[in-house]
Image 1 (cartoon, rainbow, N blue to C red):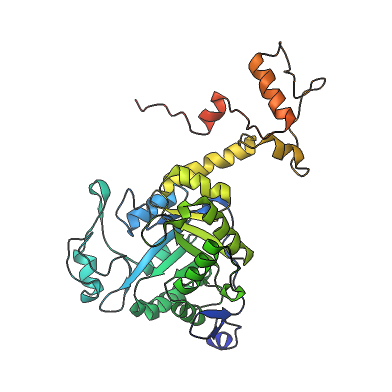
Image 2: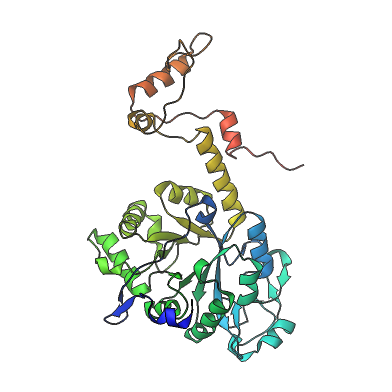
Length: 361
């Protein structure tokens, strides 16, 4: 978009002290199942975080949404790095703002799990290396805002980026200087208000509808509330009522992932996206085969869902051939009574769903 169009664009307007905004919101990302898994700093559970190696592994295993953090060097280059200092995961010490990009590119080594090593990655290189991926960029310092704007405009990638930060004013500054198609998350002021309403059961202020997404931690000292299913369901319903998608970070438990997806959470951020994608593939395969464990009463009362076909001359309560056993008769009677008994999966169904895994030889 040219500068003249940006000046006349219908951008959100600040109300009060940068807490509430008005204006149109761009559409959220597609609801394809690949977009329901977010690679937290790439495959950071297996490879050095925020490196080309980690993002490439996540892409090769089917993940299409990457989360990364941005810091800025002394010469204004935006790099994919989480901490403000280099001490934790590199061979260098001190703040990252004390080094130029040329020095970091030639000397810095990022250490990861299992002895893997890689170099620090520029944001420009990441956006160009994965032109069909979607990105969630967490702004770690206000000094990175202007260089980030220049990177987004230079790579023309605003339509596939969602920016995140604690303060809404910073996010609106990035959107106003790039494109109305840029997506953003709720700031911590609006997030805390939505959390308060979900805890107390009160109706939130409709003016908090200022973002496309809300990011809430799954576990931690800040807000471990998503472990409570009652709060999680209420929080998700309130956000969805305003058209705001819900993403939970960082979820590395298969059980928690399944619970959130069954609940209706839009996406989970995980350090192991390859495992989450495999789990999502199994869920999609189960759904296509009709093997999901759904209460019979729900499927019987739903007029929109197709009923399972039965052979001609038989009824669901009697088997096709052979005399009914005591177990099959009991299961059929429970299902026909409509008291919510779950369908008992066979060993083949469980094997296809990944419950039985043969040990590697």
